Image (cartoon, rainbow, N blue to C red):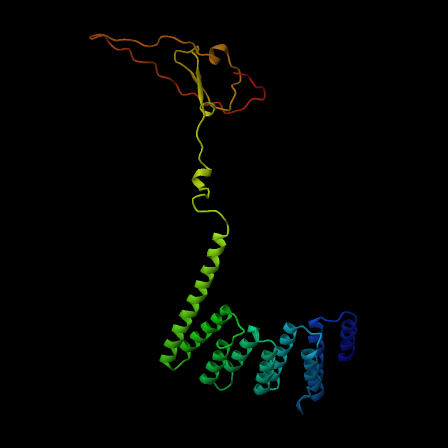
Length: 286
C-alpha cells in the first residue's frame, strides 16, 4: 500500500524533521509507485521524484554536506535510471560550485567519466585534471586523485610521455606533503622546552644498585649427620625455627696448615639442601 506507507513516513517527518533516511524512503516509494503506474507500456513519470530531490537540495535549512549528498543521489538517478548522463554531470558541477571543498563530488565526476558506455580516455583525464587544478582541495586529497590518475595512465593510458610527466608531478606532490609534515613537527619539539641532554634516558630510570640489606645471607649450623647441612636464607624470608646456633654461627678456627710430606685431608662434601622460600606469618627478629 503505497499511500499508507507514504502517509506514515510523512507524519514521522512532520513530527521529527531532518532525517535524511525518511526523505530517501519517501522518494523510493514515489519512484516505485511511478514504475507501477507505467507498467510495461509507457516510460515512468519521475517528475515527483525529481522535484522532491530538488526541494531537498535547494532548501535553505539543509546543511551544505547533506545538500551535496542529495545531489549525488539525484545525479546517480539520472545516470542509471533515466540514462541521462549529461544532466547528471550538470547536477554534479552545480553541487561543486556550492561546495568546492567536497572531494566526494569530484570523485563522482571522475567516476561518471570512467563508467561511460563508450570509453573515452580524454574525458577521464580531463576530469582528473580538473580535480588536481582545484585550489579548494587539500594536498592530501589531491594526492589521492593523483594516485588514481597514475593508475589510470599505467593501466589504460596510451601516452607514455604523459605517464612520465604525471609521475614526476606525483613524486613532487608527495615530497612536499612530507616536508610540510616534518616542518610542523620540529616547532612542536622545540616548544617542549626540554633539550635532548636534559631528557631522562631509559637506562637511568631503571638503574639499581644493591645495598647490604638486599644481599642474601646464609646461616650454617652443624647437623646430627656426618655431613654439614647448609641452610640458605635469602633476603626477605624467615626460617621456621631459628636456633641460636643458626642465628649466630659459631666462629671456629678452620684454617689448617699442611707441611711437606703430610697427607692433605679431604674436605667433607656438603650436601645441597633446598632453599627456604616460604614466608612465615610470625616475624622472628634477627
